[in-house]
Amino acid sequence: MPLSRRSALVLTVASLGGLMMLIWPLLVRVTPETRVDPPFLFLVLIPVVITVVLAEVSEGGLDTRVLAMLGVLSAVIAILRGISAGTGGVELVFFMLILAGRVFGPGFGFVLGVTSLFASALMTAGVGPWLPFQMLIAAWVGMGAGLLPRRVVGRAEIAMLAAYGVVAAYAYGLLMNLSGWPFLLGISVPGHEQTALSFDPMAPLVENLQAFLAYTLITSTTSFDTGRAITNAIAIVILGPAVIATLRRAARRATVVGTTAG
Image (cartoon, rainbow, N blue to C red; front, side, top):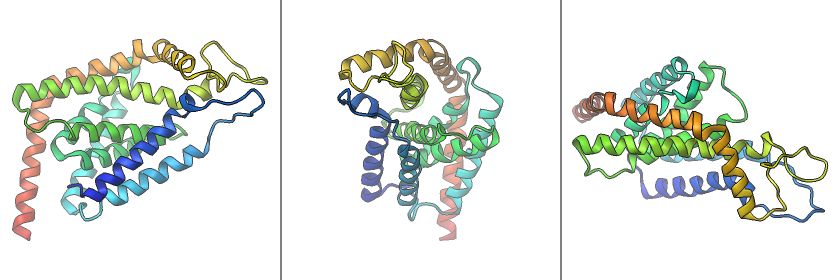
């Protein structure tokens, strides 16, 4: 799925918009008299952003070959998510997403992140207000893998992808925590339950950032995120060479078939 300049621009703008929807608690600063309610509108806007990006990225790039590969890989990732329930952070979702994004490029990686997380949520009854955030962040993971340097090959490529898998695991956990932090612990304003780690819209950026990082460290970094990072690295090192070779062979055959048909 080649990206045109317009598609790349739309993808960049939408990603920045999605990022703003995630980091809003760190940007808000109000007076004691101001009432602060969580911006539930974001839960509606994120699917809209994703839909716009998918429509733009797929324009002219989704032929039958791409659709077939996208469907197969989405199903594989959905099945992997079902058999690796994430206990202790052991998830086999992201290593396949990273390898596919590496082989087929950032546009395909973005779309695969959206479709695979949506399909897996339907299979595992994981549909909820968190799903749009999961889809968007997973799309970034797949896109980022496609943006890694192409000149790196062989063992160096596997090492690079394993390192990216570790970074992506922690980044995914960090951003997902940020999407739920203000809702799970409450907002530190009069009339709301609060803890020492709650989001405080009247506090400066540094204080909220410290509270959020402490919350993340306690709730996921030392457990789920680390488990996910180790799983990604091990799966990429052990299975990566064979999976990449298989995906590249499938891509070459699809190209040959398309050229012959044309």
